[in-house]
Image 1 (spheres, one colour):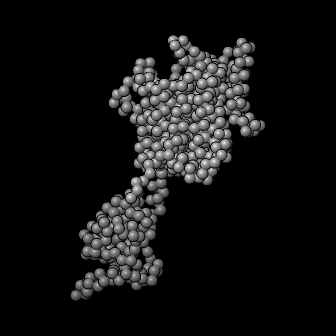
Image 2 (cartoon, rainbow, N blue to C red; image 1 turned 135 degrees about the vertical axis):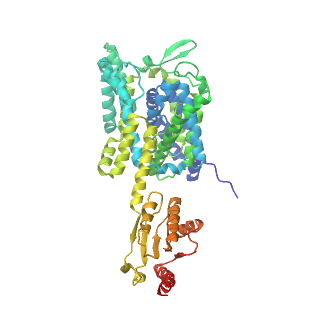
Image 3 (tube, rainbow, N blue to C red; image 1 turned 180 degrees about the horizontal axis):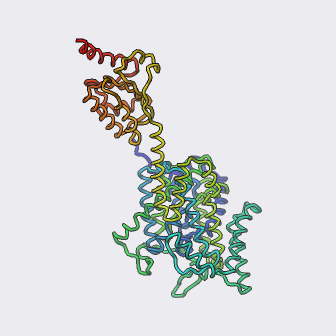
Length: 578
């Protein structure tokens, strides 16, 4: 007996099985170059959005992307920093600093590895679509709000954690807006919107940043100041402070040796792990949902089939190892993965090549990044937030979806914006589950069958009642359905219950049915159960309800139920006549 394969390297096994050719290599090279160019500005912008220096976003791509591509389960997923994590990671950075963020990412990686090894990949399919759409739209709103500071060059008095307080601070800071930042942001947004219509083969992100940088240099030459990446961020080399990002590779460092929010080394303690465990679980769940949704989209575009458990293990390994080299949280992104497919990717090698492009950019182009206007990067993230929010799709869903799904969507959206995604997803899942239980319980009913319903019921004595239960008998419907069986007068001697249309019973239903039997025994009323599936029959037998004792019987059809009821009534009639 052979041991099952561990859920790892599944994407490469699929690639080798499909056959690798020189044509596939050319496709991977083209896709890797294309996606790498897209990833560079996005990685830096997203790192800034979560409160760390831009190079940490590049380090994430450099380490996590090839590791996930090597060990994961999707041939076409491209991983790196994603906008979905901003609302979770920013509060962690503000409270625990860079070291806390990296340590939390490692914990999330361990959780995802455990999920993959536990074959939990398919469980993500049980997250309702309104929950996913609601929190992604809410995340888009939060990200867009956070970009207003750099879009207008505002000087904020504080950095509050909660959304309403953030909006209040932004409104109070509006008088500090700078013309240069606003002009560059407007020009960059215009390019991001119009460029794909004019030159769809060239990434609009690159064009927008190039135009924004040239415009920023021109404005500074005219004496109009604006914030740039080099002014905002710097690094130290041999005791000398340099503007921008370092043009060298990251060193291996344990996260707890990095500074916390107060500037002191973070340290490692049980209390710290306890505080980070909840956000780590949220990161793991969101990373799993994002990556697997991305893999499903890629499968739809290519006709391939990903391994969800291997993808979770790959994502977990990437998030476990990358923080040791300065990488923040990574997951697959639909935008990058879709661009990867459209550019001709065939295997995970494309994602590895895209990381190589980022490596070249770090080593050769790092000094040029200092000239990037912060307003242009904010415009880039604003467009990402708009695409992520799927505003048109949300409005369409609100028009056509059932009211219960609309309630779930709006609840998740509002809670994500006003509080956090962890609460939103938790409440959304509970609400969706409760509404589903309500809908399922509405499908279950117990009805009295009239004598003309079936030939076997004709001429039955009045002492016999016949019911039919239709629908699943579970905790949400059992008591309502079975309570009907107790509503009869003292003249009734036998109750026939047709349960052939009951597809399942849970323990609550079995307990409720057992209570009905006890009441019948006290009142000397016989019960005949008619028909059921093999699964239901097994549950009844294990619960001891199928045993024939006294006035309890199980029969296959209504003809047998009629005969059994009459056989029970004959001794009672004979006794009455005597």
